Amino acid sequence: MITLNANELEAIESLDGRALRDAVHEVTASRSTTALRRLELHRLGHYVSRAESRISTALIELGKAKSSAKVLRLERDLSDARWDLISAVDQMKARAEEEKQDANRFRILDRIMEPPILRPDMSVTVSYSWRPAGEENWRYGSIGFRHRHVASFYHQAGSEHRKPSPRQREREEEEALLQVWFHLRDLALFSVRDFFRDGGDGASIPEEFTAVTERGSLNNFSLRFWEKRI
Image (cartoon, rainbow, N blue to C red):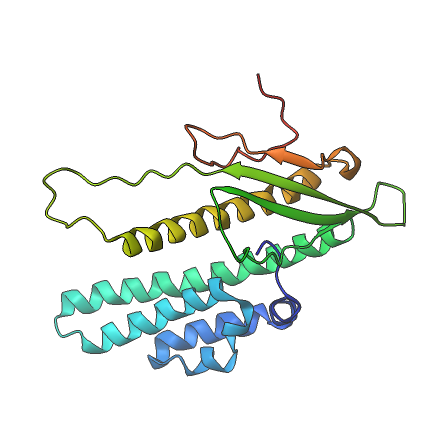
Protein backbone atom coordinates (compact mmCIF):
# COMPACT_ATOMS: atom_id res chain seq x y z
CA MET A 1 0.00 0.00 0.00
CA ILE A 2 1.17 3.52 -0.71
CA THR A 3 -0.03 5.12 2.54
CA LEU A 4 0.61 4.25 6.16
CA ASN A 5 -2.37 3.14 8.20
CA ALA A 6 -3.58 5.09 11.23
CA ASN A 7 -1.84 2.81 13.76
CA GLU A 8 1.49 3.06 11.94
CA LEU A 9 1.20 6.85 11.71
CA GLU A 10 0.49 7.12 15.42
CA ALA A 11 3.42 4.84 16.32
CA ILE A 12 5.83 6.72 14.04
CA GLU A 13 4.86 10.13 15.34
CA SER A 14 4.96 9.07 19.00
CA LEU A 15 8.42 7.48 18.83
CA ASP A 16 11.04 9.77 20.33
CA GLY A 17 14.19 9.91 18.21
CA ARG A 18 16.49 10.35 21.20
CA ALA A 19 14.96 7.33 22.94
CA LEU A 20 15.62 5.27 19.82
CA ARG A 21 19.25 6.33 19.61
CA ASP A 22 19.78 5.62 23.32
CA ALA A 23 18.28 2.15 22.89
CA VAL A 24 20.41 1.44 19.83
CA HIS A 25 23.59 2.41 21.69
CA GLU A 26 22.54 0.22 24.62
CA VAL A 27 22.42 -2.75 22.24
CA THR A 28 26.18 -2.57 21.81
CA ALA A 29 26.89 -2.15 25.51
CA SER A 30 24.55 -4.90 26.75
CA ARG A 31 24.62 -7.25 23.73
CA SER A 32 20.85 -7.41 24.17
CA THR A 33 17.81 -6.10 22.30
CA THR A 34 15.80 -5.53 25.49
CA ALA A 35 15.91 -1.75 25.16
CA LEU A 36 14.71 -1.96 21.57
CA ARG A 37 11.87 -4.35 22.39
CA ARG A 38 10.53 -1.84 24.92
CA LEU A 39 10.03 0.63 22.06
CA GLU A 40 7.71 -1.81 20.22
CA LEU A 41 9.20 -0.90 16.88
CA HIS A 42 7.09 -3.53 15.11
CA ARG A 43 4.24 -1.03 15.32
CA LEU A 44 6.06 1.18 12.82
CA GLY A 45 5.59 -1.27 9.97
CA HIS A 46 7.43 -4.01 8.11
CA TYR A 47 10.31 -1.83 6.89
CA VAL A 48 11.38 -0.90 10.43
CA SER A 49 10.71 -4.42 11.76
CA ARG A 50 13.00 -5.87 9.12
CA ALA A 51 15.77 -3.44 10.10
CA GLU A 52 15.33 -4.34 13.77
CA SER A 53 15.51 -8.06 12.99
CA ARG A 54 18.94 -7.57 11.40
CA ILE A 55 20.21 -6.36 14.77
CA SER A 56 18.82 -9.48 16.48
CA THR A 57 20.45 -11.69 13.85
CA ALA A 58 23.79 -9.91 14.24
CA LEU A 59 23.69 -10.35 18.02
CA ILE A 60 22.93 -14.07 17.73
CA GLU A 61 25.81 -14.59 15.30
CA LEU A 62 28.10 -12.51 17.48
CA GLY A 63 27.30 -14.71 20.47
CA LYS A 64 28.38 -17.79 18.49
CA ALA A 65 31.61 -16.30 17.16
CA LYS A 66 34.87 -17.77 18.41
CA SER A 67 37.73 -16.26 16.43
CA SER A 68 38.74 -12.65 16.97
CA ALA A 69 38.55 -11.99 13.22
CA LYS A 70 34.96 -13.17 13.06
CA VAL A 71 34.04 -11.22 16.17
CA LEU A 72 35.48 -8.07 14.61
CA ARG A 73 33.56 -8.62 11.38
CA LEU A 74 30.29 -9.28 13.21
CA GLU A 75 30.76 -6.21 15.39
CA ARG A 76 30.98 -4.17 12.21
CA ASP A 77 27.82 -5.90 10.96
CA LEU A 78 26.08 -5.02 14.23
CA SER A 79 27.19 -1.40 13.95
CA ASP A 80 25.89 -1.22 10.38
CA ALA A 81 22.58 -2.81 11.45
CA ARG A 82 22.18 -0.27 14.25
CA TRP A 83 22.56 2.68 11.90
CA ASP A 84 20.35 1.00 9.32
CA LEU A 85 17.60 0.88 11.94
CA ILE A 86 18.00 4.55 12.80
CA SER A 87 17.94 5.39 9.10
CA ALA A 88 14.80 3.28 8.58
CA VAL A 89 12.97 5.10 11.37
CA ASP A 90 14.11 8.50 10.08
CA GLN A 91 12.81 7.56 6.63
CA MET A 92 9.46 6.50 8.05
CA LYS A 93 9.17 9.76 9.98
CA ALA A 94 9.87 11.70 6.77
CA ARG A 95 7.33 9.57 4.91
CA ALA A 96 4.69 10.17 7.59
CA GLU A 97 5.21 13.93 7.35
CA GLU A 98 4.99 13.84 3.56
CA GLU A 99 1.78 11.82 3.66
CA LYS A 100 0.24 14.28 6.14
CA GLN A 101 0.97 17.09 3.71
CA ASP A 102 -0.44 15.05 0.83
CA ALA A 103 -3.66 14.44 2.76
CA ASN A 104 -4.39 18.16 2.80
CA ARG A 105 -4.44 18.22 -1.02
CA PHE A 106 -5.39 14.73 -2.21
CA ARG A 107 -6.34 11.30 -0.94
CA ILE A 108 -6.15 7.94 -2.68
CA LEU A 109 -8.06 4.81 -1.70
CA ASP A 110 -5.24 2.28 -1.80
CA ARG A 111 -6.93 -0.74 -0.18
CA ILE A 112 -7.69 -2.55 -3.43
CA MET A 113 -8.39 -6.28 -3.22
CA GLU A 114 -7.50 -8.66 -6.03
CA PRO A 115 -10.44 -9.91 -8.14
CA PRO A 116 -11.81 -13.40 -7.42
CA ILE A 117 -10.98 -14.54 -10.95
CA LEU A 118 -7.88 -13.40 -12.80
CA ARG A 119 -7.65 -13.29 -16.57
CA PRO A 120 -4.98 -12.04 -18.98
CA ASP A 121 -7.19 -8.98 -19.65
CA MET A 122 -6.94 -7.31 -16.26
CA SER A 123 -7.77 -3.95 -14.77
CA VAL A 124 -7.38 -1.88 -11.61
CA THR A 125 -9.59 1.05 -10.64
CA VAL A 126 -8.09 3.75 -8.42
CA SER A 127 -10.49 6.11 -6.66
CA TYR A 128 -9.27 9.44 -5.34
CA SER A 129 -10.32 12.85 -4.06
CA TRP A 130 -8.57 16.19 -4.34
CA ARG A 131 -8.93 19.85 -3.52
CA PRO A 132 -7.99 22.36 -6.22
CA ALA A 133 -5.74 25.19 -5.03
CA GLY A 134 -7.71 27.80 -3.14
CA GLU A 135 -10.79 25.60 -2.69
CA GLU A 136 -12.07 23.95 0.47
CA ASN A 137 -14.47 21.44 -1.06
CA TRP A 138 -13.28 18.00 -2.09
CA ARG A 139 -13.82 16.65 -5.58
CA TYR A 140 -13.94 12.95 -6.40
CA GLY A 141 -12.93 10.75 -9.30
CA SER A 142 -11.53 7.42 -10.41
CA ILE A 143 -9.42 6.01 -13.20
CA GLY A 144 -9.41 2.47 -14.57
CA PHE A 145 -6.06 1.09 -15.71
CA ARG A 146 -6.16 -1.78 -18.20
CA HIS A 147 -3.48 -4.24 -19.22
CA ARG A 148 -3.36 -7.44 -21.27
CA HIS A 149 -0.82 -9.93 -19.94
CA VAL A 150 0.95 -12.21 -22.40
CA ALA A 151 2.21 -15.40 -20.78
CA SER A 152 5.76 -16.53 -21.47
CA PHE A 153 5.90 -20.13 -20.22
CA TYR A 154 8.38 -22.38 -21.92
CA HIS A 155 10.29 -25.58 -21.25
CA GLN A 156 13.63 -26.32 -22.86
CA ALA A 157 14.01 -29.48 -24.88
CA GLY A 158 16.15 -32.06 -23.13
CA SER A 159 15.66 -30.35 -19.76
CA GLU A 160 16.16 -32.49 -16.69
CA HIS A 161 12.84 -31.22 -15.34
CA ARG A 162 9.74 -33.14 -16.30
CA LYS A 163 7.00 -31.41 -18.22
CA PRO A 164 4.48 -30.08 -15.68
CA SER A 165 1.08 -31.68 -15.38
CA PRO A 166 -1.96 -29.73 -16.62
CA ARG A 167 -2.90 -28.88 -13.00
CA GLN A 168 0.62 -27.73 -12.18
CA ARG A 169 0.70 -25.65 -15.34
CA GLU A 170 -2.64 -24.10 -14.36
CA ARG A 171 -1.35 -23.21 -10.89
CA GLU A 172 1.76 -21.63 -12.38
CA GLU A 173 -0.35 -19.55 -14.75
CA GLU A 174 -2.65 -18.45 -11.91
CA GLU A 175 0.33 -17.41 -9.78
CA ALA A 176 1.87 -15.53 -12.71
CA LEU A 177 -1.39 -13.65 -13.31
CA LEU A 178 -1.67 -12.76 -9.64
CA GLN A 179 1.85 -11.34 -9.53
CA VAL A 180 1.21 -9.29 -12.67
CA TRP A 181 -2.04 -7.98 -11.18
CA PHE A 182 -0.24 -6.95 -7.97
CA HIS A 183 2.35 -5.16 -10.11
CA LEU A 184 -0.40 -3.43 -12.09
CA ARG A 185 -2.16 -2.36 -8.88
CA ASP A 186 1.01 -0.93 -7.33
CA LEU A 187 1.96 0.94 -10.51
CA ALA A 188 -1.57 2.35 -10.73
CA LEU A 189 -1.49 3.66 -7.17
CA PHE A 190 1.99 5.16 -7.52
CA SER A 191 1.01 6.72 -10.83
CA VAL A 192 -1.97 8.62 -9.40
CA ARG A 193 -0.01 9.64 -6.31
CA ASP A 194 2.94 10.92 -8.33
CA PHE A 195 0.60 12.85 -10.62
CA PHE A 196 -0.91 14.73 -7.69
CA ARG A 197 2.45 15.24 -5.98
CA ASP A 198 3.74 16.88 -9.14
CA GLY A 199 0.88 19.35 -8.98
CA GLY A 200 -1.49 17.61 -11.38
CA ASP A 201 -5.15 18.61 -11.56
CA GLY A 202 -7.54 15.77 -10.78
CA ALA A 203 -10.00 17.14 -13.34
CA SER A 204 -7.58 16.20 -16.13
CA ILE A 205 -7.26 12.54 -15.14
CA PRO A 206 -8.93 10.30 -17.77
CA GLU A 207 -11.57 7.76 -16.82
CA GLU A 208 -9.57 4.93 -18.42
CA PHE A 209 -6.00 4.33 -19.48
CA THR A 210 -4.43 1.34 -21.23
CA ALA A 211 -0.94 0.44 -20.06
CA VAL A 212 1.92 1.24 -22.41
CA THR A 213 4.14 -1.83 -22.25
CA GLU A 214 7.66 -2.64 -23.31
CA ARG A 215 7.58 -5.87 -25.30
CA GLY A 216 4.38 -6.74 -23.51
CA SER A 217 5.73 -6.16 -19.99
CA LEU A 218 4.85 -3.46 -17.48
CA ASN A 219 7.52 -1.05 -16.32
CA ASN A 220 7.68 2.04 -14.10
CA PHE A 221 6.48 4.26 -16.96
CA SER A 222 3.62 2.08 -18.24
CA LEU A 223 0.84 3.90 -16.40
CA ARG A 224 1.93 7.51 -16.74
CA PHE A 225 -1.38 8.60 -18.19
CA TRP A 226 -0.37 12.27 -18.36
CA GLU A 227 2.56 11.70 -20.74
CA LYS A 228 2.12 12.03 -24.47
CA ARG A 229 3.70 9.25 -26.48
CA ILE A 230 4.43 9.14 -30.17
